[in-house]
Length: 102
Image (cartoon, rainbow, N blue to C red; front, side, top):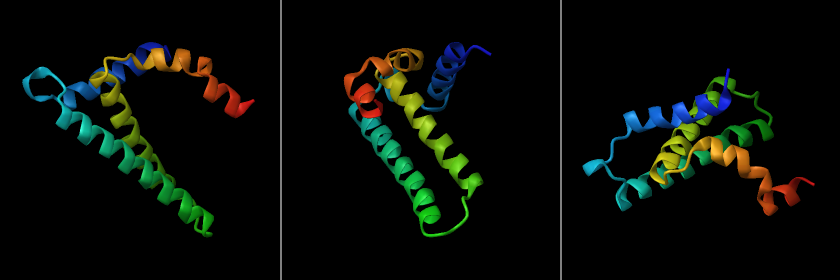
């Protein structure tokens, strides 16, 4: 399995689901994508909060919400014309991320 090809192919697939008007991502698309991304992050936070309050991890719901978040990440990559593999290759080079985990 080649993760670089797979992750880029996934982002390309999200583009087949989300076809922007006129073939170009507009401000409205970017707004909906960002709200969707934030909303799904909130859904994941709710799964974690339930665990913190003593409930068992709902792995089915966690998987669904993380998949939804990944969809918005993939379509955001398309909207900004950034290959997901480029992000993965370069994430550790970003000072904030490296310093946070050192």
